[in-house]
Image (cartoon, rainbow, N blue to C red):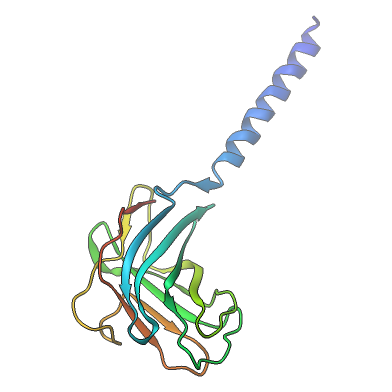
Length: 172
């Protein structure tokens, strides 16, 4: 085999390895990807929620979905991407430093399940190895005591407290 052919094969192999490494670092694993916790959302209900965490290219997001938390009867249909939501989490056991927020939601109707997110990290930072959890809060949910706030258009904010910690911490 000629030296030119060997050099060409080596260069192609190096390029393939470089591309593979570059592509593999664009998504970071969060473990576990999904966990559960219990929430009290007042008039919107109480029960289990599923939390899903993602980290794609360093963009960290959190989604909350529940069949136990429901849009109350008599509520007008809620359009897609109109609910302002904040989810507060503890970072490495410290409260008040990290939150996910935004207006990302599917359309919802009275009696329907609640889903918000995936919401981007908007307050604080998360580094590889950091852990997050929705800490359980005592007392009734309210503006000064909440884990999640949900504000649909034309409706007063709904405040939710976690009544249990997550089944498993997220490790970013």
